[in-house]
Amino acid sequence: MGSGEGARQGAVTDRRSEEAAQYRRLYNGKRWKALRAWQLAREPLCRFCLITEEVTEATVVDHIRKHNGQLDLFYAVDNLQSLCKHHHDSAKQMIDHGHKVVTYGVDGYPIELN
Image 1: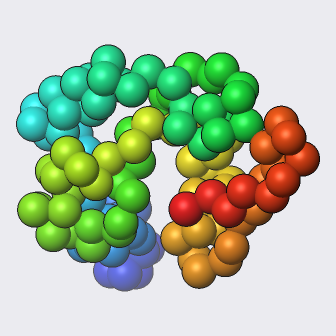
Image 2: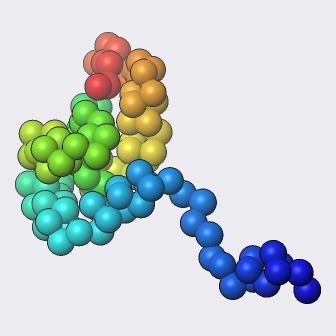
């Protein structure tokens, strides 16, 4: 067994970036967990679903504007919205990547989500 091989066996590498580790610490913190619970109690239904008059429980607290690790944006109450997992993982990701997302209201008129 070469010296590199033994070192590899004992080492556990984290391939994620330091930025991702910082975000995990923020999201696992007591302050965020309390703010998340408060937001879901304040806005228990998915904001995007309500636009089309669907009633869906929100399970994700989303940052409207990307916080990029800025604590003032991360904890800003006016930067939070409640979404269902489906909309957070689909429409909101497209919006975050600069795409326009359009849905249709019950009246048939297009509505841009943002």
